[in-house]
Amino acid sequence: MIMNCSQYVGPCVCGKDHELETKMVVVEYDALSRFEEYMDAVGLGGKRRTVVYDSNIYALTEGKHVKADQEIVLPAQGLRSEDVLIEAMMERLDNPEVLVAFGAGTIMDFGRYPAYKLGIPFVAIPTLASSDGFTASICSVILQGQKKSIRMKAPALVVTDLDIIKGAPVRLVSSGVNDILAKYISLVDWKIATLVSGEDYCPMVAGLAQEALDIMRAAADKMAATGEIDHEAMTMAQMKSGLTMQLWHDSRAASGAEHLMAHLVEMKPPRFEKAEGIHGECVGVGTFACVKEYHRLAKLRPKAKPFEPLSGDWVMEKFGERLYDGIMKENAHDVLGTFDPQNIVDHWDEIVALIDTIPPVEEMEALYKACGCKYLPEHIGIDPALEGEMLDISAAIRNRLTLIRMKRVLEF
Ligand SMILES: [Zn+2]
Ligand SMILES: [Zn+2]
Image (cartoon, rainbow, N blue to C red; front, side, top):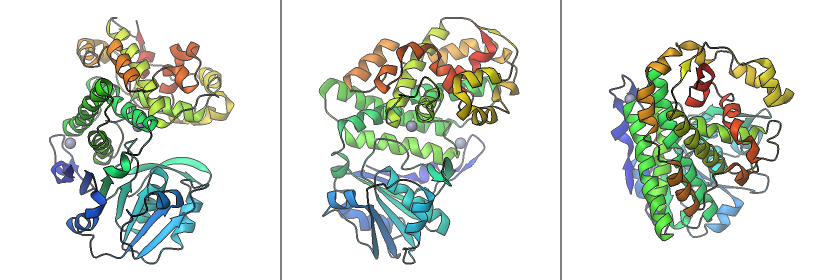
């Protein structure tokens, strides 16, 4: 399958003029044998190119390597997305006009960060498709010792060779399923926020996230029923989800209350020290907890209560001293204080209708089980006794309007 991305670019009903750095996404078997054709198609064919690999991928993909004016093979051991490592690699660059990154998540940052710094295009050849980061323009890098999410270059071209992708371990496939099924929650969160606070919304971007969700759901149903993994569909779902972030300059469509579980696991506040899982797995646990909670709330009728900033005592108790300042700073301009909580009550019937689009708890649980997905707190080292409050705690990590955050101005 080849996706021409120009269909998403230009003036939109939302009032914005959408742009994409990504021109074309190829998801095909044996795609690398036609790599030069795709480079030509996006106007990068004749350009002087450096191709970056890590040593593991370089060895594993012998026979699949692409033509290069310069090849850089970084030692896989100890490789991480960190400014000092990336800048050390940049000193070795031999005046490329285009950078090609060949590998999994980390190696991509060795393409998009230098490409951004040098103002040249970047091409991605992902060897895994277990998350939606490949077509996104935002990524997490360690800058001066601190993990930061920053804007970088998105790939002008993504070429995914399914003969490589199909070798991925099932655990990563299941994690990828989780990352996209999360859109059941993130899309509802965005739509509710728009209803009650007038937050900017784009039906085209939301529609693209919905498309990613529908494609993944069909593939997950097939995996559940037959055990067969549709790598083409699953990979395309990841690519579409990533494009929503590039189009919207924000992860709004792709990440709601459920994604904050992944941040919680990474931050490890008190009582969550043993939490451990790859991105999609943590997101799966967040999604299932939200599915349960949203359906529970939909059966109730709330009253509005006045907004109050997060209390410092609560933040200290839940996050501890190490994380206190960061959480307080994040919540200094709480989005909850920017609209009348009564709006939520006034729109409650519409909110319930949106929640009704989320599959029932039993259906989600059966699907997760059949696809080998992680979905319960204990699957990622969280004490099940914390299930009741883990969503409320994670909602404080990011100042984004989700139904979980709205519970602070509601009484049920
Ligand atoms: Zn739009
Ligand atoms: Zn994700």
